[in-house]
Length: 111
Image (tube, rainbow, N blue to C red; front, side, top):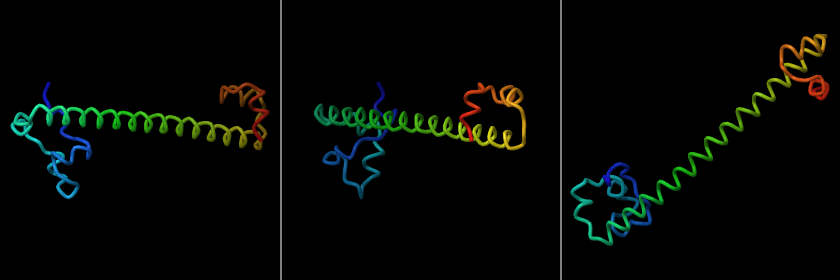
């Protein structure tokens, strides 16, 4: 395993790698620096990488799910507006069903 695949570590390891003002130390570790870590430092480094990846994956998943939910809600709102306008324009239920794919009971529920 290469330890520099994702060179980010959590701020929990700042004792070993620096503080926030020294953020470059937290991010930029060469393979030589990592190779010189003691067993304990290496374990802490690997643990902090794992924690970072876990948090990042959780946030990315939540972001993707939120985006998908927002897009679905937007599609429903757009479809409702279209159906409402079609009804105001006097289009028949058969044509609205054909164009939107909605059943008549759903079309009736849209003002």
